[in-house]
Image (cartoon, rainbow, N blue to C red; front, side):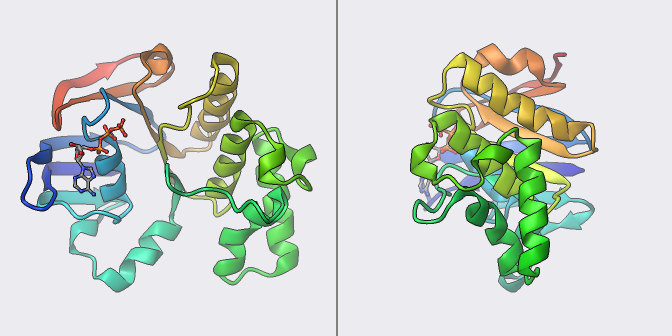
Length: 222
Ligand SMILES: Nc1ncnc2c1ncn2[C@@H]1O[C@H](COP(=O)(O)OP(=O)(O)OP(=O)(O)O)[C@@H](O)[C@H]1O
């Protein structure tokens, strides 16, 4: 469950990136965050991950008020989330398997366990045969699906994806979305930002943002 209660965000005393946003997302929903460039989509996702703090209001993730977390607790919050954010690139000097194993290795998993779980995650995104490849040998769509495998290897209950289909053609974008949709049946909540409206009918719900405001409440799509 993700809940926003009257959340606003102002960067450096500038204008509002988000203003008075309230909504709640029950577990297991696939929700699209739609709106033009600059509407506040990335800011909203970063606040759920504790990367940015709201200027006012409360954000509750799985019953925990994350706006009250001490800085030292943020890494624990982040480990429970599957993050596919725009500035988190794959490491080009490591192969695909090693990239996907990394989140497990840093949390103390054994190499054998990490290897097995990373291969299972690659299987889920349909790229088990690319385990030994290097990121730059893959297409943009394949790289995004590797990023998804890396995000889900810790078995998060919530996946946050910022424009995961940007720069992809329709076929590759569909593969990325199908990989994300598959987790929904396992009770995982997916919040996906996109300024590309052609995919919105695949979501169970859509949140529309415009200039930092929620312009359309729950618009039930599929
Ligand atoms: N770190 C920052 N410092 C100052 N202003 C920021 C910062 N990050 C975002 N903003 C501003 O907040 C507003 C919302 O930006 P945000 O990146 O959240 O929008 P977006 O909907 O994700 O856009 P895009 O689709 O282009 O990524 C914009 O006006 C942007 O300039």
